[in-house]
Image 1 (cartoon, rainbow, N blue to C red):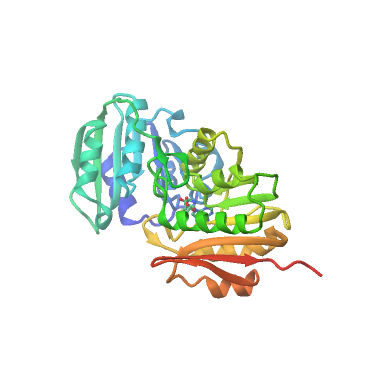
Image 2 (cartoon, helix red, strand yellow):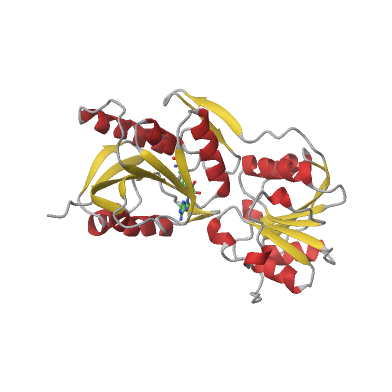
Length: 345
Ligand SMILES: C[S@@+](CC[C@H](N)C(=O)[O-])C[C@H]1O[C@@H](n2cnc3c(N)ncnc32)[C@H](O)[C@@H]1O
C-alpha cells in the first residue's frame, strides 16, 4: 500500500490509539490512508466502507464486504458520522458485536462534532471520553460495549405516498419523505395520469438513481416499472430492499457510482433526487457526472426526471448533454425537470 500523508483526524486517531493491537477494524475511511498506515504498522487490518467509492481505495484483501460485524477486532478506528441517527446505528451494531475488551477511537473535525455525539455513544459504551483538540480535529474514545436491542433500521408509515419506509440511520432523510422527493413523485404521478394510462401495466426499465431509503424505487416498481435502485451506499441499498419488501415491490439493487456499468440504450426512465454533498462537503460533481452519463444509458425516447434545489445549476447541463428539458414543477425550494433523449429518426 502506498503511504499517503495522513490528515489531522487520522493522525490524531492513531496517536490516541497508542501501540496498535493485533486486529484493527477501520470504519468509513474515505481516502484509505488510515488503512494503509495501520497495515504499515504490521498488524492485521480490515476496512469496511459504506460508500463504494471509498471501498475502492482499499486493497481487496483488506476489505470487509459483508456486515462490519463479520470480523472481531481489538480496536476500531472510525470516522465519526455527523448525523446522530447514523452514529446511533453504527454504535449499537458495534456494541452488540465487539468483544468486551475492544476499544473504539472515533475521530472527526471539531466543526462537525456536537455534545450530542458523546451522549449517543454513552448509550452504547460504558466509558466515553473526549480527547483534546489538535489541528481542528478531536477524537472520542469508547470502551465497554453495552449490547442493546438495535433501534435501526426504523419503519415509518408515509401517508403522502401510502407506503412504509424502512431505513438505517445513515441514510438520507432516514425513513422520512424528503420534500423534494415528494414534489418529484407528485409531479411524476400527474404526468403518468395525463397519458390516460393510470392503470398499472408493465412499462419499461426504470432506474432510481441515488435511491436512499428506496421511496422512489418502490413507487416506480408499484407503478409497473421494472425497477433498479442504484446507490453508492450499502446502508441505502439495505434500506431500499427493506422498503420495497414492506410493499411487496420488486426492486433490483445495484451498488455503484452513478450509471457506471449500465448498458447503453437500456433504460426508459431515470428518476433521481441527486446527491448534493459527499460526506460533510457540498459537492455537485456526482450529479454532473450522472447527467453526463444519462444520455448513453437511456433508450432514444427515454426520459430523465430530476428534482433539485432551484439554485443548483443543472438545467444548462441537462439541455446540452441529454436533450430538450422542461420544468414540470417548481416550489419555493425545488424544481422538477423532465429531459427527453430524442428518438432517432
Ligand atoms: C438526496 S439523496 C436522495 C435519496 C432518495 N432517493 C430520496 O429521494 O430520499 C441522494 C442519494 O444519492 C446517493 N449517492 C451519492 N452519490 C452517488 C453516486 N455517485 N452514485 C449513486 N448514488 C449516489 C446518496 O448515498 C443518497 O442516498
